Amino acid sequence: MHRRRVIEAAYLDALTHLPDALAPSPEVRAQAIEALLLLDQALGGLPARVRETFLLSQLDGLTYSAIAQRLGISVAAVRKYMLRAAQACHAALNPMP
Image 1 (cartoon, rainbow, N blue to C red):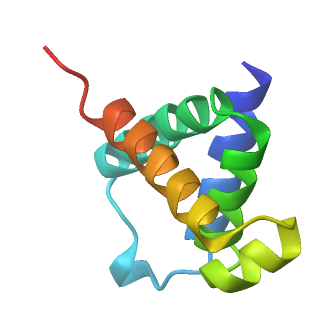
Image 2: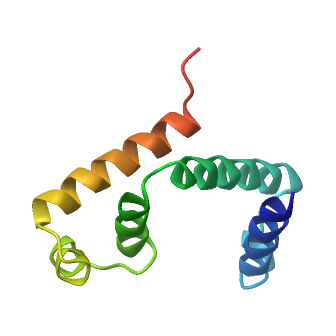
C-alpha cells in the first residue's frame, strides 16, 4: 500500500503543474494511476541492471551510448535490456486473455 501512495502522490503532484484546461478527469486519473502501478510492478520484477538501463533512458533521457558508458556495458547490452524492459511494460499493460 505504501508504494501505491508514493506513486499516486507523485502523479498527483505532477498534475498540479498542468493548466486547469489540461487536467485529466477523475476517471482518467484513476486509469493513469493503475497503469503506473502496473508499470512499477513490471519494472520491479526485472533485474536491477535492466531496470536501471530503462530508467536512465526514459527518465534521464540518456542515449544508449551514454548509458553503456555509465554502466560499463556495451551498447548491444543496452539494446537488449531496453527490449526486455519494453516487453515487460507492454505485457503489464496488455495482459494476455
